[in-house]
Image (cartoon, rainbow, N blue to C red; front, side, top):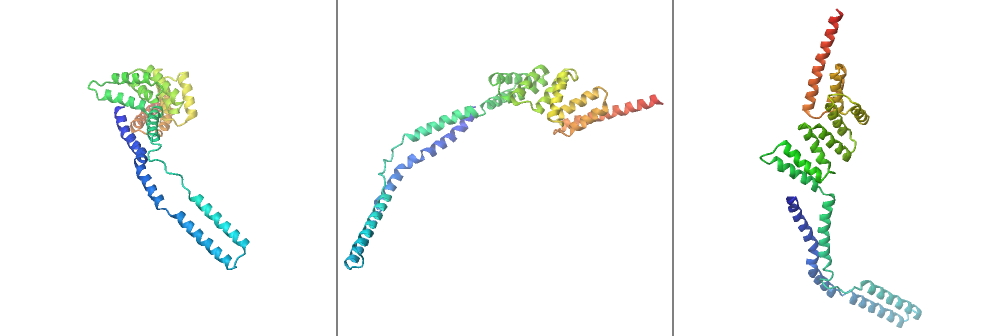
Length: 296
C-alpha cells in the first residue's frame, strides 16, 4: 500500500501544478489585458466616422440635396448606430489579479479529498493487501502451504466480500486435504460471484470425490443445473466420465471424456483425459474378449 501511495502522490502533485497554473499566470494576463485596452482606439475611430458622416449630411442639407425630414431620419440613424456600437464595445472594469485566489486552493483540496475517497470507494486496496500477504509468505524463508492458508484466512476475516480471497483459498484447502473447508470457501465464492457454471462444476467435483466418487442427490442436482447452463462444461463432463468408468460403463465414460477434452484449455488436463480414455478402451476390449470366450 505504501508503494501505491508513493506512486499516486506524484500524479496528484502534477494535477495540482496544472490547477495552480491559472493563478501563477494571472498577473501576466492582467497586465496584457490592460495594455490591450489602453491601445484600443476603436471608440475614437467610431466617433470620428460618426462626425464625418454627420458633417456630410449637414452639407447635403445646406446644398438642398436632402429635405429636413430626411436629414433628421438619417441623423437619428447615425446616433443609434453609434450608441449600439458603444454599448457592444463597453467592457467591465478589470478585477484585481489575485481576486478569487482562494478558489483554486479549495479546488486543489477538493481534488485531493475526492481522489482519496474515490480510491477507497472503488479502488483495489483489498486486492493489494491480498497480494502483499501472498508475497510476504512466498518470500519468507519459512514459507509453507499452511502459512499461506493462515495469511489468506486472515484476509478472509478482514475482507469477506472480496471474491479473490475465496478464489485463492478453496484450491489451497483442496491441496492441504481439507475438502470441507474447500466446499465452504467455494460456496462463499458462489454467493459473491453468482451461480456460474464453472464454479458450480468445481463444487460438484469436490463433493463428488468427498462422497467417495458417488453421485449423491446433492451432486446430481448440481450436475443437472450445470448441464442446463452449459451442456459442454468440461469439469462436470469429466466427473460423469469418472462415475461411468467406476460403474463399468466404459463406452459411456469414453463419450463423456471425449466431450470434456474439447473444453479443456490446459495440456495437463487434456493429457489426463486421453490417458483415461485409453484405459477405458482397454477395459472395453477386455470385456468384449471375455464375453466372446464365454459365448464360445
